[in-house]
Image 1 (cartoon, rainbow, N blue to C red):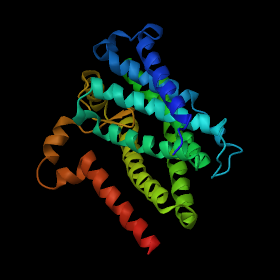
Image 2 (image 1 turned 90 degrees about the vertical axis):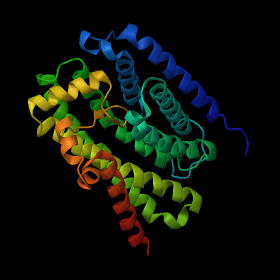
Image 3 (image 1 turned 90 degrees about the horizontal axis):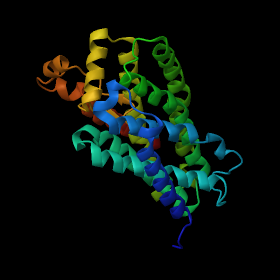
Image 4 (image 1 turned 30 degrees about the vertical axis):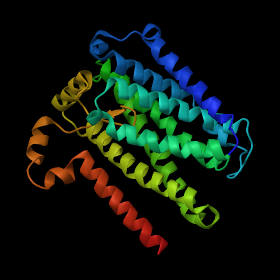
Length: 290
């Protein structure tokens, strides 16, 4: 396989986001409430910069199998660089048991976009996924407001409403469309690429459903006491994270102790939900194929 110039773009993107991460603390100094977890403050602002700069319109005018280089392939090459930077940032600053979900998520994204960059195929399909970043803007803003101790403000409440709406429109609906397209075009996609896409959708779909449940429970069905506990866990870096630290796991310590008894713990916890939902998705998908 000939060397792809997209790899240089990926490397440049990684370096650029790494430099941005290093300089963000000077550009956006952390408030007193976030100074105990400075790396997370920088990480979230870096993620916000990526989400704000991602251009879903880059998919316009690109056929699903387009081998063209600029500008669609350029945009697709920038994405893995950010996720690689975020991957490294978490490995260096966070314990593995706190970030394994996100590391797993990033690995899938890097592989899927890597195929588009290396093969110069399915670039438009990959860029459709950037619609998800519209919602990511509000997810990152939510975490920033949480760390800045601005939970009980009109700004936080307004962001929560917009966040929920964009989550359904730009995240769940986008993933559903991509899954449908992949299934309908399975005969036109090489088996290896189809397998990667299928596994990717099977992972992303349940993870985002679980994240939606956590988000809904946290911002609309959660007591003030639980919200304060969540904030404390985020500041201490003790909470599990999902999708870029955008939303901490919303299980209180008392609930965790209660659910720890028997199989109920496995089914109620984030890991159990992920495994069970992924399994159900595979069963449903296989039944449609057969």
